[in-house]
Length: 111
Image (tube, rainbow, N blue to C red; front, side, top):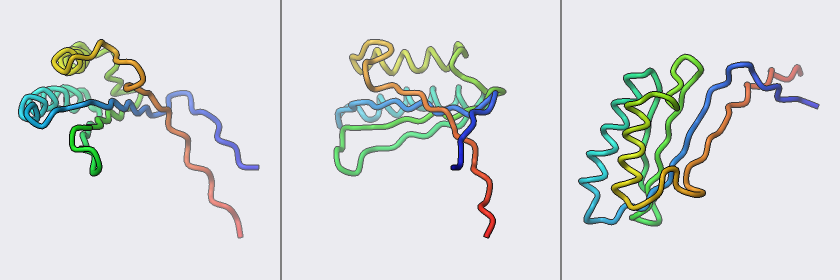
C-alpha cells in the first residue's frame, strides 16, 4: 500500500467560490486584482476562473507554502474581506471558502 504521509510544512490551496452578476464584473475584476497583487507580493500564487457553464459563478484560488502563507497577511485578508462585503456575503461565507493541504508526490513504482 502506498501511503501519503503529511509533510511538516505542506503547501496549501484556498478556494473561494463567488456569485458575480454580469453587470458587476468590472467591479469584481478591480477587487480581485487587489487580492491577486497582495497575494503575489507575499510570494503566493493566485488565480481566478469563470465557470464555463454558469456565467455568474467565479472560482478563486490562493496557493502558498509555509514561507508564503497569506492567511494572516493584512493586505490579503483585507482584499478577501472587501470582495465578500461588496458581493453581499458574510466573511467567511458559508461553504464557499475551503482550504486544501497538498499531498506529497508518491515515489515511482519499481518495475
